[in-house]
Length: 110
Length: 110
DNA sequence: TACTCATATGTGTTGTAGCTCATATGAATA
DNA sequence: TATTCATATGAGCTACAACACATATGAGTA
Image 1 (cartoon, chains in turn green, orange, red, brown):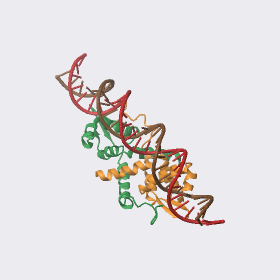
Image 2: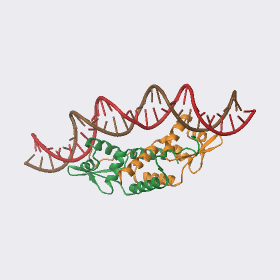
Image 3: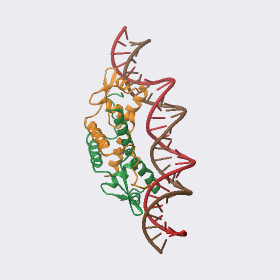
Image 4: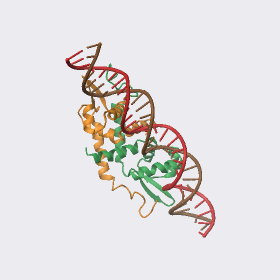
């Protein structure tokens, strides 16, 4: 994989690697919601939601849409949610046995 | 999606959101390689590779395997790489138009 | 135009991630 | 067992991410 691709991928991962941001994205689902709804749904402060929305927006992970006094935010498409599900299933099935404490070599401290 | 699932997902994303770590993972591909190989392939210092390998290991994203004096690291399975490809294609096709500078509302500064 | 509501943004603080240096551990070999 | 090679780990530094507060902007309405 090219260095450029890796950097873009890492950027997306980093953006999604913040629990509050991931909550915002998943709370959207496939519907567009105004910021005030996201604030209510997540319990975060308005300032903080706006802060994270900007990063998500600049990364292209979320799309704003003004409707009157409100600004609705939407996911660009549903594929992202499908990828989340894939990874989530992967985590449940293949990994995350406890806290991965015993990740070393069997019978050794590495 | 449950809060627990979101946290686990966010943890994985955060781990993969560091370019050097992502380079380590993708440089492994489906083969197991000793740390010294990873050091050569990535150009990072040994200390730093070890530092990141620990995080990857604790997250279950990489599996160590001692062979004599060497410790080989492997990906637990290939599905992870497939997910990377999915996201990478998504980035190329749907997103990342320039630097997303024009992510606001058309004809408005939001 | 003045006022209100919804959202964005600039500034400052604080915790933590990433990195390096020095050193420890553990396997192989003489 | 002494030495060497491969890798891990603890301590300390620095930069940046996440957050809050105060304030600005921009749309709707009286």
